Length: 118
Image 1 (spheres, rainbow, N blue to C red):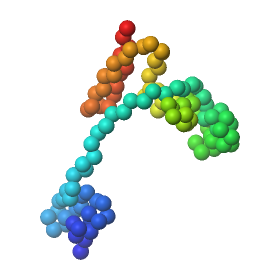
Image 2 (image 1 turned 180 degrees about the horizontal axis):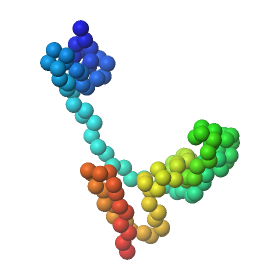
Image 3 (image 1 turned 90 degrees about the vertical axis):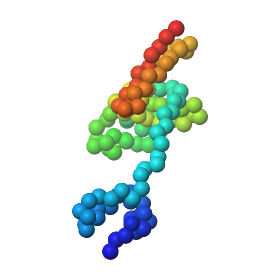
Image 4 (image 1 turned 90 degrees about the horizontal axis):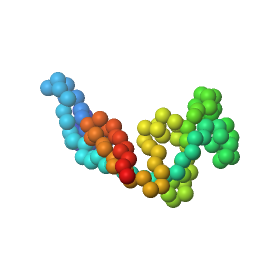
């Protein structure tokens, strides 16, 4: 018979109790939410352009042979990566030197808006 202790050892947080015909919660997820802000530099760059610049060959083969629009991203520590256009544009908003901004974040929906002011 599978016990609650067995489930905990496997890292499960719910099991089905067939005798009681119900789902039992073993432990609640205790992870907390965090919101991070990072300042990056980016420029439009297709998947294949990024792959060629990084001497990695044709990365579009990994995405079904279709080149994707996206952005080359450079983080503050110099790390460089590539992000698909839709993912990038949801996560980042364009700002200029000297801009003052306020970030409005809706915890329920996960949507956010960047409000620029002078």
